[in-house]
Amino acid sequence: MARRRGKLLSLILTVGILSTTFTGCSSSNNSTEDGVAKISIWTQEGQVVEQEYYKDAIEQFNELYAGEIEASLQMIPRGNGYEYENKINAAATSGSLPDIIAMDGPSVANYADSGIIVPIDEYFTEDKLEDFVPSIITQGTVDGQLYALGAAESTVVLFYNKDVLDAAGIQAPTTLEDAWTWQEVYEIAKQLKTDDMYGINLEWDLGEGQIYGFAPIIWSNGGELLSEDGKEIDGYLNSDKSIEALEFYQKFAVEGLINLQPLPNDFEEGKSAMYLMGSWEIQTIEESYPDFNYGITYYPKFSESSKVVSPSGDWCFGITSGSKNQEAAAKLVEFLTSAEEVQEYCSAISKPPARISVFDTMEEYQDENKKVIKEQVINTAHPRPISTSYPVLSSEFASALQDIRTGVDVKDALAKVVTRFNEDIKRNN
Image 1 (spheres, rainbow, N blue to C red):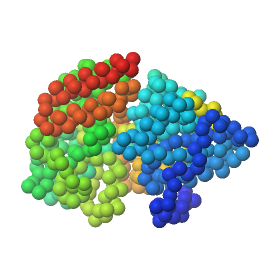
Image 2: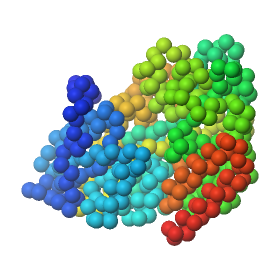
Image 3: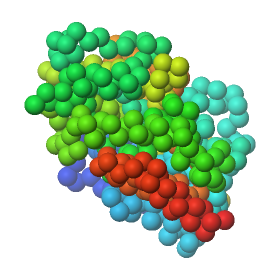
Image 4: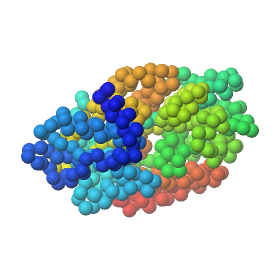
């Protein structure tokens, strides 16, 4: 692991001259040269440390398979306009896809259904998968076949201001079994709200973050977003259980317990007592607010009789149908998801690993706060639905939640989602 630290510091100091494409992106049509299998991989352009990780990982892979396989990497900006996904779609149309693409978890079903990626079961047998957390396998599986595998996972936890809760005599749960219910969080938020501080921050981005962050409220109440096959929405998203869950969510907004337009870092600056946010917020706190006294507890469950359900999902790798060297591509995917690389990658970008064994080798997951993350990723993670019409579900769900926060009737808001989803699934079929 130490082999990369010097390079990392150098990159941070010279980020201004870093090239996005680390090696020339070769087409998968150039399959062999002098007996060496040529493979290419595309990933989204992440933060600086992520770019450096991938650059070094590909170098290490090429050294390991020198004379047998040579991989090249291209990192593509994603942006708000989804330039990365647009480039994949354009390449699929023109027949110029690389051998491997990285994709966000909810995209797997679309790419599998459209034939952009192929099943990888033959390369990743059960014994190779047994160390991966269940959610990462579920995320990459479509119609019983594995199409994608990732190195990292994600989760959402409830951050709280320790000083504020201590002053109120409130003890946050320290075990999964004792996780707060949403009713308890609601009561605490009411108790802690003042003229200068909201009870809780439930703010997410207006896109994918809405379904990622809040769908577990529905699941924990026994509701669903879609049918198991991802083709039916009527009777699922608009079921009594789903409506009940989102009506409770609505109370936080209409009763003024949350700020509908919070500024960045409201929680860290004492403007809200609690904050439902991804585990990546820890990095923001530690880097920018090192003296802030905070704690972490579990994603709330809907009721005492229900179980904790937490968000999950992250970027993963799939092999394209146009690859002329699928076996070599599988070796690169296996390398990038190996225990050593998972630890290296997750340490660099502060994400929880997708391998169970790696949690035990990363010291940070043994402390009081991060053990919550470990427990959720292993035990309570729930991937987003697998459906060819997932993009429509995601965008329409986000719009519905914004309406719900302003007081729109939950049934009416969800009815629009059902209509739009059904229109799209009909077109896809």
